[in-house]
Image 1: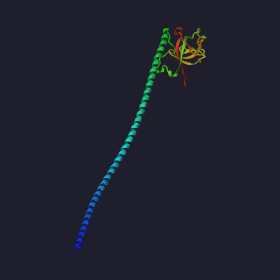
Image 2: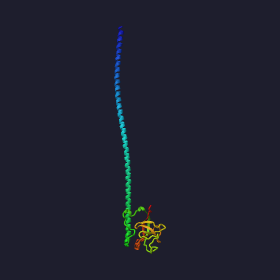
Image 3: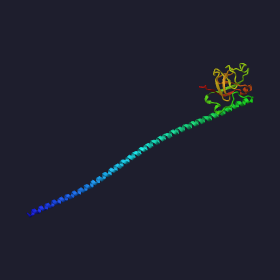
Image 4: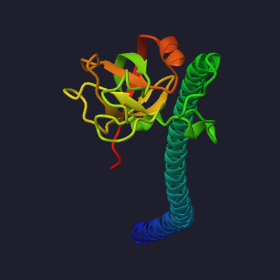
Amino acid sequence: MGRDRISQIKAVVKFRKDIIEHKKRNKILLAVLALVLCGMCFAFVYAKDTVKEYNEKTEDLQTDMQNLEIAKNDIEEQKDEIEKQKEEIKTEQERILTEAEQLAKNNQSLIEENMRLQDSVKMAASVGIKPQNFGEAESADTAVDYSKLTYIGEFEGTAYTPSPDECSNNLGLTASGKPIVPGVSIAVDTNYWKLGTEFYIEGLGYVVAHDTGGAVKGKYRFDYAVFDKSFARLLGRRKWKVYLVNPEE
């Protein structure tokens, strides 16, 4: 009996000890579990805040990228506008340079033509007359408008007067039936030029084909009507640059 009692007591003590150990382990597990849960909660909160911050930063980054794209497009548009303006400026500069070159060329032509006309005037003055179609231009651009002329070559020119011995009649009439106008009328070969055709002769001015002549043969030949025989002889036979006056449209 005594041994059984002791064995029972030991068993009870051991059982209670096991219960205590089990409770102790459970408390430790509960404590660990609580710590893990707290850590997980902290991690979840931190992760949530991190995700929120990441999303906010992502949204800000996307907004910045959109703003940068808009700014880039604006810059591209401004660049295109600048390039367009540069092209317009370049075109305008080229136009101005072309006009300046044309004006310089026209001015040079006017200077040269003025010198030729002065030479003709000097020749006329040397025999005491003044060419009938000579006059001072109101302005430089109205002297000779070469845009309305077509250069047709160098002609051999002579001069004649409306005298009976040089005309086919003593009435001073041309082959066209119109009176000879010294300084304006010229004789041409009607095989090449119709009567009434208008020309511009550098050094003589604007003339009209009013007449014909037995000695005036060929396309590049004319006889220029003047008042004075001395002037006609002084002009002699020489080459003149001739332009055809373009008909008015």
